[in-house]
Length: 93
Image (cartoon, rainbow, N blue to C red; front, side, top):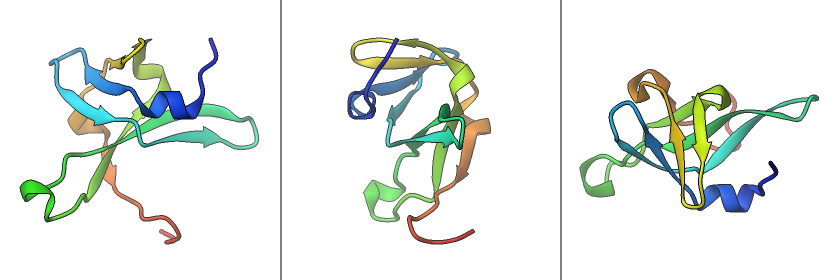
């Protein structure tokens, strides 16, 4: 199965263990030089009506994806264990 990144970004991610809607895919992590996708990145919900910004992202391993449908991506994971600090582009850790 082949899918474009732009098509992947239009899909909402839903956790099948608790039915929680995690959000929409914003990025993917790729292993270099193999070129293998290893995870999808979904921004965590913003704090306080979006004013506080986002501090974390859900980084969900590719192995946790159960199904990619026309509109959604079903994942089998515990969302709280997939939270990682949000990294701003251009900044080094």
